[in-house]
Length: 473
Image (cartoon, rainbow, N blue to C red):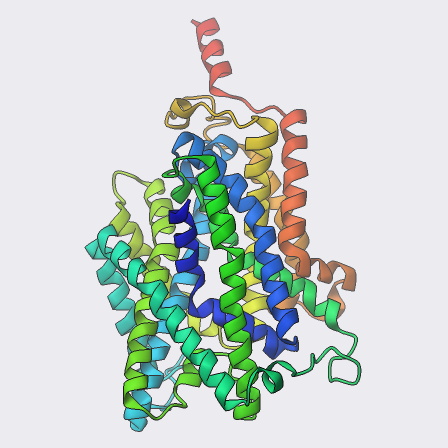
């Protein structure tokens, strides 16, 4: 139980959590609205997290194998790769955060390296890109070293980042004149404020984004829960470790970001930007080392373990865990993560909500299949056989694949509008707004469609194929 709680405490205390909270402040929320939104989002995502963990704990199977029961022995590669690609994006974001910390803090000592001409097609300077690649290379080295190095980093990471966060909180408290002025900043949605009356229009997509933050782990949690000793351990451990830690660390982000508005007369939602305002070399070096170690540990644990398994699932004889990790790293660079976190709006409304539109339907299908259709009963041996009962039609469950497509479609118009591939006049407003509820709608639609499809269109299974072969002979 305590191992699961420690896992979530370690993974939740990270720079993206800080940025998640402070980005809500930048969007107009006051401190308690932001913290409550994050806590509520994590309370909601905890439910599918615990439910999907059940199969891993009961049968000792990882996520790609768990998917075979609903998607088929070959069809399981579809949700596995979708989840892996999202992890590649997160890997890139964390690697960018680490590289950005190195770049900005070194820039305090060597101002000449800051700025510079942006490289064509990249939009960042050569020095900035070099720092990113340097930190990315450290990640690749840890993957090469293996799981023991990851365990060592996780053991020292959480205390480092929590201590750094508390020090930042103390600094903000002293510089802003206590918590009173800092947390009394009004919400931009209050009467007489710039965004008066627009709270609910911002809250629901923000809540969806908060759910999307850990929507990846809510699917592949069997990769971790397969090692749990009991259901009680994984349930209580995750409940203790996830929502409270996210709320606490996000409060640090909210409080410090609010303080920057008072201290610097501008909102700094990236803690690295805050740290560069310090002049002490000792503080800057300590902060840089702490941020790099903490970001490295979270990145490897949350964004390499699972996609490495997912890529290995494609061709187990050719792709090892290590090679799967290298593939994750390369794709993470190609996705240009600096553009994903360029501003708070893009971070929440483009990145977090967009991929929740894909992961929500997958979660709905897995839970519908395991808890409703199969009553928590799986044939483990058949999961590892190409001709077993989970073969469906040529290794693919077309009911599951169609449910995934149907679950994601309602959010597509809003996504295209958000990335400006469609104009606002080309689609109805009501249809565009569905994107704000992408995870909820995708989960519910896929859940219902999958169960209806299973009842109405039973697929060909291996058992019936064998009977036909016997009859033919």
